[in-house]
Structures are given as structure tokens and as C-alpha cells.
Image 1 (cartoon, rainbow, N blue to C red):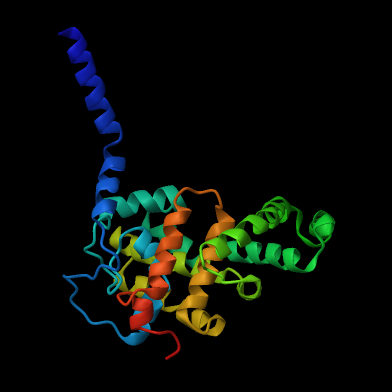
Image 2: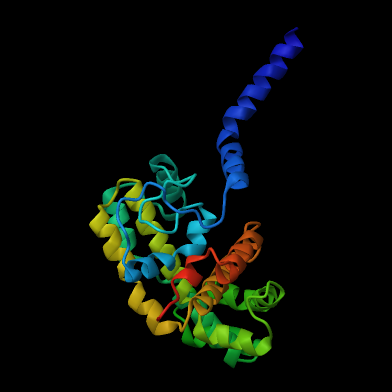
Length: 266
């Protein structure tokens, strides 16, 4: 009897400890691609939808609706978003949310420096080039990003983000700015849902990405390629990356994708 009680206590403690993981797994298994908000109260303009669509891949990753600022999809409540914001971006208050949104967006610049070196400098000269041209505080991370680009290049081709070496080179030349733009849209949405910023503040941040998106990309496929480039360089060994490649493929091919419903620059 005592053994059974001990086993029961252990099972309960494990359930409590891993409750969040189990809950997210169940929600993920139930998730339908590109959910719409059945409770939305306003219709978006084409520009608003395009701005929101810059965050499509990360919205799908976190099971957000794609057609409104708010989301009635699973995993989109205030508590969940506060947890995600605090663990990923150290956002825990209205002030830190505002500061994050106003200062966010430098990761792609470091990745793109590494890409430029990768494309234009012989591998044996990378380190001397980095030592000569990169400020000391950024040398280590640029070196790491350079070292990942062979692996990432293979991943992009294997997962059909690039069809061949010529297309891969074009993706590299466009750089990884979409990685930051897409995350900025998510941070704005999550901060609004978390109650840290107003609806107007959220839309101001989200709308601000659209001119840059249109300036840098001819279509959503190019944007998605840039996003996956940045994401892969940032964490090439992350277990969730294969799922993100699947989201990219769906986003660029599915008739239900807002990227096909609302083409960029049309």
C-alpha cells in the first residue's frame, strides 16, 4: 500500500511539473493550419493584413489566428503570452514591452555581416577579416554565424526553400531581415494580448514593418526564404526547426495561406 501511495505521489508530481508541456502537445496535435478568428469584430484593410502576414510563420508556430490582431486560437491567452514574452525577450511589463518594440531588430544585421563574409572571403581568411573589420564585441557571434552557413545552406536546399545553388545565392544576397520583421509582428501581438500595450500601439509597430517588407521583397516566398535563413542561422540545431520548414512550405503552397490570399505588392 505504501509503495502505491509513493508511486501515486510521484505521478501527481510529474503531472504538475509537465502539465504545461502536455497541454501544449495536446493543443499542437489539435491545431489546424491557418486558423481564422471566429470572434473578430473588425475587418482588416489589405495593408493591415499584409503587415500582419509578415508574422505568419511565427504566428503558425504559436498557433495564432492570421486574420486579426487578436486571436481566439489555442495557446493565445494572456497568461501564455506573458510566459513567452518573459522567457524569450525578457518582456514583463508595459515599459519593457515598449522598450523591446522600439529597439528590436538587430539580429539580422549580424547574420548579414556573416553572410557577406561567407560569400566574399575565402574560408581560411574569415577570422582575419572578422578581426580587422568587426568590432570586438561582435567578433565571436559573427564567427559562429559564419561557421553555421554551410550547414544552413544544405538545410535550405534539402527542405526546398532553395531549389538549387543559384537560388540559394539569391536568398543569401537578400539576407535575413525577414527574421527580425516577422518576430517584431509577433512581439507586438503578444504584448497586446498580454495587456502590456494598447491596440493602437500594437498596430503602430505592426504597420511599421510593411514598407520595409515591400522594399526588400518582391513576394511572400522571398520573404519566407529570408525568414527561414535567419531562423536557421540563429539556431540550426533546434529540434523545432523541421516543423518551421513545414510551416514555410504550407505558407507558400497552401490555398488556405494568407500569403496566397493576399499577395505582396499587388
